Image (tube, rainbow, N blue to C red; front, side, top):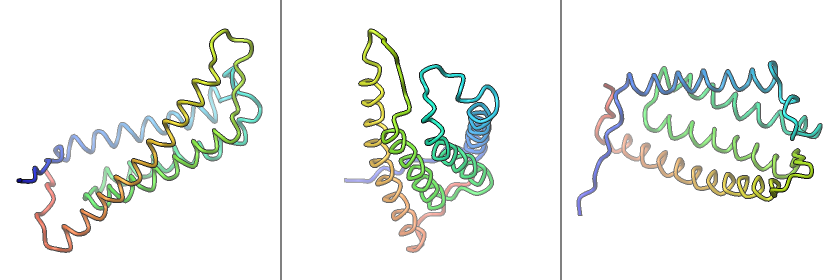
Length: 154
């Protein structure tokens, strides 16, 4: 059975995507910490202050990783960065689960249950994504060490 090799998008398209991710992460960091700030959301409690450092770290690591990818993104580097950003994101989601800084009042819908389920999906998805990134890292490193095909750069 032949193994199908998936082509990477052109370097310009990748750089555009990375740049958009940098801008989105910067805007989210600004929105959470400056204007309007997380305090304006009525369903967040004062306990949110305990999770903000982890959430900020997740966004900041994503911003830095994407800025680095825009300059240099060989497959091994991208896989390593994806693993790191996902681990930091997992820490943030686990912290949200632990603190659970949400108060939905007397809503008729069980928002707490829904948010708990979304957090579980985020945790499970993050664990899977970390495994995938590590496998990609090993494969990319093995391919480059074995003199595999040069990565597409254009």
